[in-house]
Amino acid sequence: MSTQRAVTNRLMYQSSLMADLAETAANGALRQAAREALILFQYQALCSALLEVCEHYQVKAQSQGLNLAVLLESLGQGRPDCWEYRTLTEAQRDATNWVSQLLKTARAGVDKAPEKLNKAAASGQLISVSIEDDATTNHYPNFQTDLQQWIDEMRSMNDQH
Image (cartoon, rainbow, N blue to C red; front, side, top):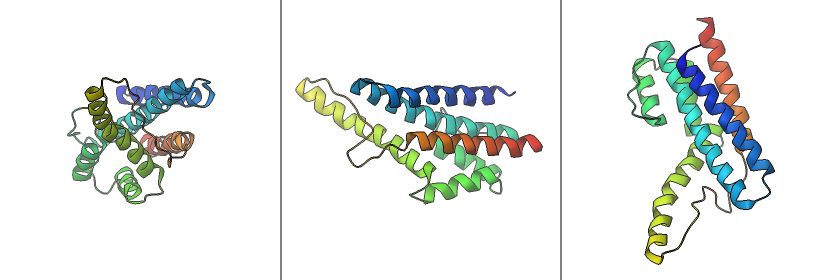
């Protein structure tokens, strides 16, 4: 097993733990923290799986850290014909797809953080940076299942070659 595959497996396990905690936590703050951690672990697992793909196709990943856009660009330059690249780029264009929704949710948390932190610093308050708003529904378990299915399919195809 490659080192990158082990990293992806660890991130998927951690996101699974957070999904369970987000569903079972009685404390609202703990439930919210678990949801935020879950989205981050899912995003990192998707990036890690993409690094597995780059490793398989011997494409040099042009990324410092885990940046999906940069990883996809690297894969697109090296192997624009591969299934993994095509499915992820198509998924990002479909607002109803789990990839698009996961990325939107992850970005919302990152984008909200500086604004809330600046307001809190000005007033001297402690704050919670939530990645959800009232219009967001809980798709996290579906993201987890869909991400695992995508990773399993990707590995199945790559293990055959």
